[in-house]
Structure formats: structure tokens, C-alpha cells
Image (cartoon, rainbow, N blue to C red; front, side, top):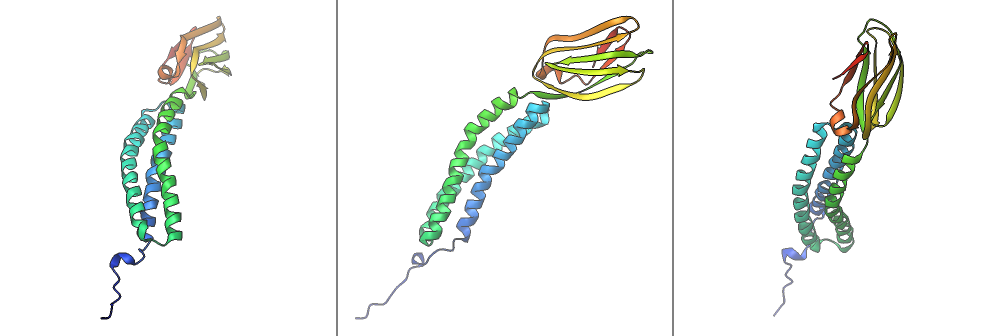
Length: 210
């Protein structure tokens, strides 16, 4: 009796192309939420804009879904590469392992991003204008620990710039024909409340913060 050689379909080496695509998608599940979270952290920390807070929430929710998808892809990758040539299998599983570690690390990184983003000094854009009829001189801005010497402003003239800080006094001082004046918005301001102020309008011995 002659024994016939019989090769089952599972005995053929698998095409690694599918596994490569799964690993690439797993890396995207790791890096895309991480990148969005970093942008949200820095953007919110510097501007306190709601758009960046929304982006951070989207990155957190999307990252959770991506993590689940990435973990499923890891299982499939390990299963699929069992029939891939040993050298290719080793390389693909190594890359898959890196993606798996990265996906798991995204959660503590997201927690750190929330804390760091809330603690970063905020960049606040401000304008100071002379709404009066006479010159004001030696205009000095003291906002959240940042000191800015604006100088002199003629009637109708406006200064625009930005300051960066977290907490501190919010005040502006100037001199006109009536002497030295100061307007204090808050002695203990913080960036979470002060960023709503866009400009300061000086007129005579008063200043309007809006």
C-alpha cells in the first residue's frame, strides 16, 4: 500500500501581509490617541479654550475604544503569525508587543496629561487702550505674576500682547495729568477665571476690564 503525501491547508506558511496590516492598525490605536491627548494637554494648558478640553475628552473616549480594538488585534496577530515563517513571526510579534505596551501605557499617560494640562501657565491675550482724551504715560500691567511695561498711550491708542501665568494679582497702573492711578481686577486672580478678560480700557482715573 502506497502512502500518499497529504498536505493540509494549515501546513502552508501564511501570507504575512494581513498580520502586517493588523500590527500597523494596532500601532495607530496606540499613537493616534496619544498624539491627540498631547495636543489637548498643551493647547488647554496654554489657552484654557473649551475646544482643547473637548479634544482631550474625545482622545480619552476614542483612546479607550482604540485600546479595546488594539487588544483584539494583538490576539489575532499572535494567532495568525503562528503559521508565518519564524523570522517574520518574531519580527511581527515584537512590533505587536511594543504596540501592546504602548496601548496599556496610554491610560496612565492620559491621567498625567490631565494633571499637567491643568497646571501649565496659561497664555492670555490682552489689549490695553486709552479711551480718554489725554495722554496716559508709564502704563504698567501686572497680571498673574507677569509684569509688563507698556509705556505711553495716546488717546485712542491700543496696546495688544500676551502674558503667561497661573496665579497672582491682576492690576494696571498709569499716570495722567491727575497723577498716578491703579485699577485692580483681583488681588488673587487665577488663569481659570481671568482668561475671560480680553481688554482693559483706561479713561481718566478709571479702567474698565472686559
